[in-house]
Length: 276
Image (cartoon, rainbow, N blue to C red; front, side, top):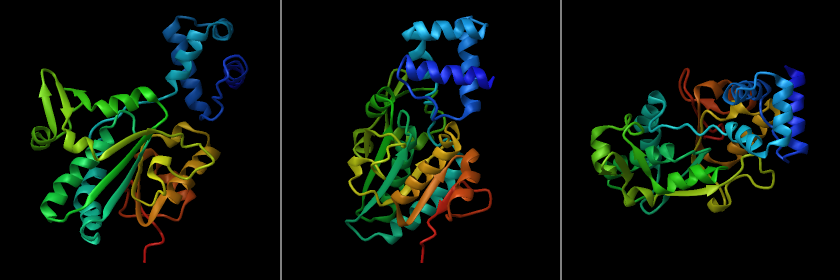
């Protein structure tokens, strides 16, 4: 199988100018197996020959490496911590007129970013404070970013949204639900590659300094050395009193690479070790 992997990487790099060596080997092999089934070509050498000559299949294979699945309030435990502890703490620490800054890295079609906007809007309303919220939602796919900007979702996509929030933050038109303009104004969608070496944060954010950085269910798709590059970048982008939110499968990576402290046992939320 490793020989197959080497061939795939070589064909994609030298024939189609796509560097897929950045991805975890087991992830690449699973993607390869899925394309064999999808194309009905079960002989590896036959598939390599087709991949080399067929740019359409090369793009299909490359696109299959970009996992864009997302949900509103995807991890209920994590969003409970954000709603009941982290956001209230941030809001109470801010003066009127100041700003809360959030980075949703690998945002896909925006559900995560809009979930955070809903929580903030509800909590800020209760607090009575006049605070600004800026959420920088980034991804490498123009297609999912366009979907995020549109803010339109089907009935299945909003199944985790509470009825009160659904009525307050969405406009229902037939079978679709569109985020209200008030909420959409909090979120800035932009293209950004987490492996970009020349910057520590999205250019649109100017200086980073994020109160919350969210990067969930993304790191394990990359090689271990690049996982470290990404985690170091995320940590560098955090404010002194910031929080990093990861996926369940990535919390051990963060613990092993950084000195960030998990805020509760088995949590996927970490706080900056520079906290006083």
